[in-house]
Image 1 (tube, rainbow, N blue to C red):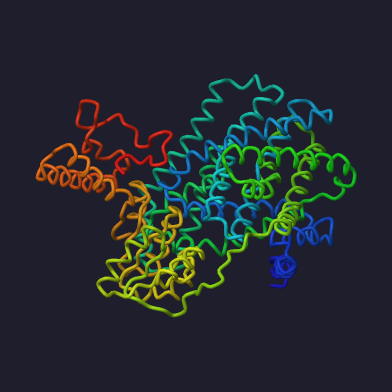
Image 2: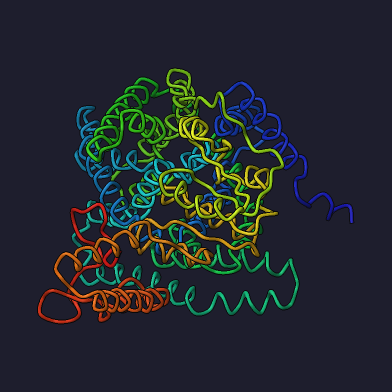
Length: 601
C-alpha cells in the first residue's frame, strides 16, 4: 500500500504548478501586465532554468496545447456558418495578404545573417504565424472578441491555421531528397486532408445533434460533459490524422455545433477545461525558454527578434492600412500580432526532422519565438499607456436602474425614433437605451428620456427592465451588435416577444435563426413605397399598383421562408429578372462593388 502511494501522482509538483499561477496572475494583472505575462513569468520561475521544479516542459506543453484546441472550439461556437461565410473576404483577403506580405519581408532576415535561402524562408515563415493563444486571450481580456476589429484579427488567425497545411508541404518540398516524393504521394496527402474535413462535416451535420438529444434525455450531466470533450478532442484528432491542424479541427467542430440548441451547454461544459489548460500552455511556454541557448546566442537572438518584430510590424500595419483600417486600429493590430506563435514550433520541428535546420538552429529559433511571445504583453502595456482607449463622455446622461416599461427599445437613431412614435401615441410605456451620449443629449432637448447603456450587456438589459418587458425592439444600426443583442436576449428572456432591425435580407435570415420573432429590413418598406411612387408616375392604375405590390410581398415572404432552410440561393425563381426570363437564375446573391449587396433586399 505504501508503495502504491509512493508511486502515485506527484501532488507536490501539481500544487506548485497551480500555486504559481494563482500567485503570479493576480499580481501581474494588478500591476497592469496582464495574465499572459504572469503565466509566462511563473513558468520561467518554476522551470528548468528557475527553481527546476519541472525539468521536462515539453511533456506539459503537449498536454497544455489542448487549451488552445478548446479555445478554438469555443470561438467556433460563436461563429455560425452564415457568419463565417460573411467573413470569407476577410479570411481569404485580409488573412492571405498579411501572410504573404510578412513572408516576403521576414524571409530576408536569415539571408542577411548568412543562412541559406531555404533555412531563412522556414525561419521567417515560422515567425509569420501569430500566436492564436496570446491574441485570443488578450482580445477576450480587452473585450474585443466580438467587435469588428477583433473579428478581423480572428479572420487572420483562421487563415494562418489553414496556412499551416501548405507550409508543412513546403517544408517537405524544400527538404534534402524531396525530389524522391512523387506527385501521387503529394496528391494523396491533400486528398486525405480534404477527406478529414468532409468526414468531420458529415458527422457534425448528421450525427452530433441526434447524439446530444439522446444524452440530454438521459439527464446525466457528467455524460454531457464527457460528450462535449469527446467532440472537441475527436475533431482535433481527426484533423491530426488527416495531416491538418488540431486547432482547425476543434474550430470546425464548434462551427458545426454553433446553431445547435445545445450550444450554450457545450460552452459551459468546455469552458473550465479551456481556462485551466490554456493557462497551463502559457506556463509550459515560459518553462521552455532555454536560458543557456539565450545566453550563448544572445546577440543573434536579439538581432533576430528585433528584425523579425520590426519587419512583421511593418507588414501588419501596412496591410491593415491598405484594407482601410484607421491608424489607431492598425497600430493596435500591429502590437497584438507581431509575435511568433505556437504553430512555429510545429513548423520548426518538421524542418528539423527533414534536415533543413539542425538541433541548435531549432533551439535558437524556438527561443526567438518564445522571447517574442514574452515581449507581446509588454508591447501591449506600452501601447495602452501611450494610446489609452478613447473615453466616452457620458456626462449629462443617466444609466438605467430598475426601470420598466411595456416595451424596451434598444437604439434611438433614425430608425428607433420613428418606431417609438406609434407606441407612444397609443399610450404604451417605452424604455429606451442607447450607447451614444451625444444622441441622448440631443434626444433630451426634444423631450425624450433615453438611458445610456449598451444592449450587449446583460446587466444593462436587466436594469432597463428587459425581464419585465412584453416586447423588446432591437433598432441599432450596427449589424454584428444587433445579432449579438438578439442572441443574448433570446437566451436570457426566451418568452419575450422580440423584433429587430435587419441590415439586409441576409442579416434578416441570420436574425431569425438567432431567435427573432419578426425582422424588419431597414430599406424594404421604403423601397416598396418608392416603387409604388414610380408606378404611379408612370400612369399605372391604382388597382394594378396594389396587385403588383401584393405580389411582391407574397413572393418575398415565400422566398424568405425557403432561404431559411435552403440558403441564399433558394427561391431565385420567385424573383422578376430583366434578362428576358422571369427568374435571374445566374444572378449572384452578392453584387460586387456595392454597399447594399444582398439580392432581394
